[in-house]
Length: 221
Image (cartoon, rainbow, N blue to C red):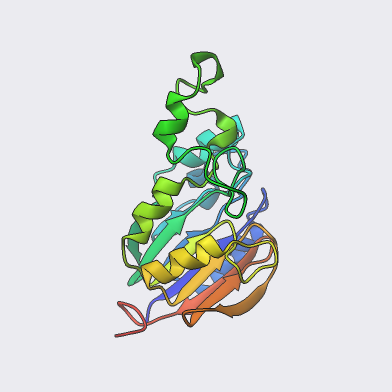
């Protein structure tokens, strides 16, 4: 039975993660954002001997930290479904931002990265692309594209409606994907809850891990 280790919000302290990996011997490691890297992610992790996937958080867009993360050889899970440890893992990194999309506060200001870039003057672009301050945003177009797929687990930085500061739009995404479990970070709150659709939500503490032992191919196998 594959063993998956999920870890959130190290904020520069990777000792708990590395200790958890040594103790638990997982088949795959999934990281949920807010790394605040001061050197490349690959150098921090070293050769773990197991697959690693990650999503970004709102503290991962500072210039050096951004490069240390997004240049990693380990794949980003953001906006796609990836099989890791026998499970289909859907990922959505980042947070909701009023300058892009903040569910419950009117219509999105911009539906996609492309739309936002077209509205951005050259002087406000970062490295010729989107302003850095919106590179951690959740975009409606990417939410929709992910909702049209199927998965077993959804990993988020932002929280769904199970958390007092969460968003029903992310619960809707979990239901559209047909997942059995959602894991998120961001709020540094270790808890477990259920949301409509019979979906388990697990929130992780700062530098906190959760290990799941699940059947190959999902709970239905």
